[in-house]
Amino acid sequence: MKHLVVLTGAGVSAESGIRTFRDTNGLWEEHRVEDVASPEGFARNPALVLEFYNQRRAQARTVQPNAAHLALAGFEEVPGWRVSIITQNVDDLHERAGSGQVLHLHGMLNQMRSVANDTAVFDCPGDIRLGDLAPDGQQLRPHIVWFGEMVPAIEEAAEIVSTADVLLVVGTSLQVYPAAGLLHYAPASCPVFVIDPHQPEAGRRGVRYVAEPASTGVPRVLRELTA
Image 1 (cartoon, rainbow, N blue to C red):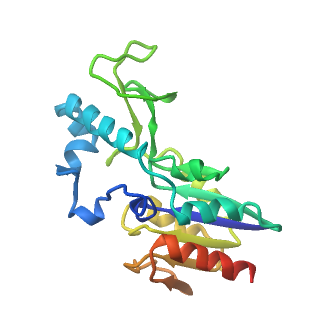
Image 2: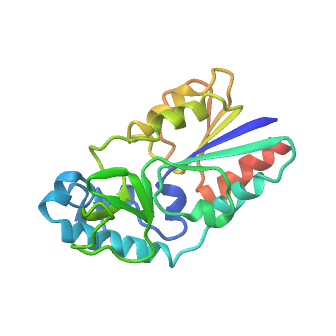
């Protein structure tokens, strides 16, 4: 059985209506990244950060998976293939599309954790407010990996990529590390497709660039794999 590994980034979610850093000149909903997506920003103004993610969480519930999400989920039904998705995105659109194997590198909007314990994670169906406490008595925060924080799932992701027969890289600038370095764990013989209208530099020989949005590029490449 062949193993298709897919690394997805913000460009996939953007087509469903979720804004990205790249498309807003380093601003996210008019906020500086360091103010709403860093431990320092949270320490300075926790109420602002909590409300920012409350809004992101609410907005994510209003959007739907697009053709790229649906095509990847559907590919799990193709005989002779298994699919692993590694995503930098914090929404649950892959899961809502039906994908069964999804590893979130940067956490999830619909989860939360204590500020004192990053391993005890809870579902977050609504808002988090200042004063909302985890069972350990500490303030709750979004289960999001902020800039400057460790990426706990990166080793598991590297192991998954190392077993790829085909690697798809979709909708990511390949500028955010350590996620961008995952390409280099793919076997030398593994075909790599980079699907993105911006054609980010992969830093690897033999990469095929598909200069299309995810919603058209992903179905096209998946059709080719089964042709």
